[in-house]
Length: 400
Picture 1 (tube, one colour):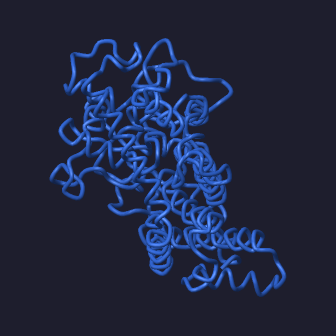
Picture 2: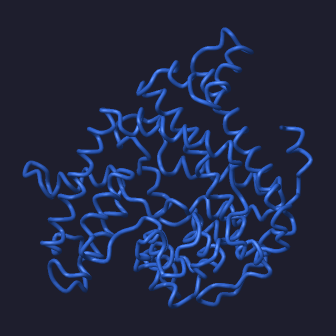
């Protein structure tokens, strides 16, 4: 496989998103003489407050469980490395791929998916909550850093890729999978059309598949480190098992930690190589000649082969059963959900308890505007801040 992949270097150079052809920013700016528009997008993402907070937002393990497990920040960096490497090899624009990889988790709440699940329930009567739409709110509205505009004023291509990296948002009936389009997305789309019915550009698709590759590998790493499942169980999985056995056969006396690392390196390489080969196969079949053609294909250009997709499905099923539904994780998740629900219910009913800058301009308890503000406040919390804020508001022995 490696030899076949090596022949495909630069195979997508004709599809690379050209910064000189960007559709621009919502708010006009003088561009930099030293950086392209996508390099500036990437740098704005890295320097924003929401990106820094990813350091203390967890993937699976709640803050305090240990310092060696992944956080949203380390995960985003790993996704960025994979997306940048793939893009550089096949000839795509690695700057926008990196920007999208770094930004893809900005809208996630504290406590991983547990926090998002609770906010979705709490916001059901207030136009809902969606982490992808929250990411758009952050980069277009909630970040207050620049004098001339709210948000980061990213380019059209970066915003489009952020919103649509997993595929089209709407179908012919105005919704995807029977679910309404999140309000934050429809509101912004009315101001700047992100073409919600099409696929995103090739770099956004690369960032999305890199996300899958990264979390599949690092969840095995974290799960094994935490002792949530034994190494013997991993050996029985398709794709993953043969890779571990191959590494163990080549290095029979290798210590456990190195065995895991070497095996997961090989797993990432196998998945990356498969993406390159399969995407090139689709390229030859579908024959897109430009980034615009990629958006109009009606199906993704970048993805796994059918065989690898089946392997990945088995991997996700294993992790769901043995990691995400492990008693230890479920108990942590239960506590996290109660904390988020407590915070939302209290702040919705008593919005004057919000910090002054968050409370300003609200129109009373339990209104749509207040619910949205409370959701923004909680979604931006790190795990540690949520735990501390809960203690300040509910524990009479803790100073407010």
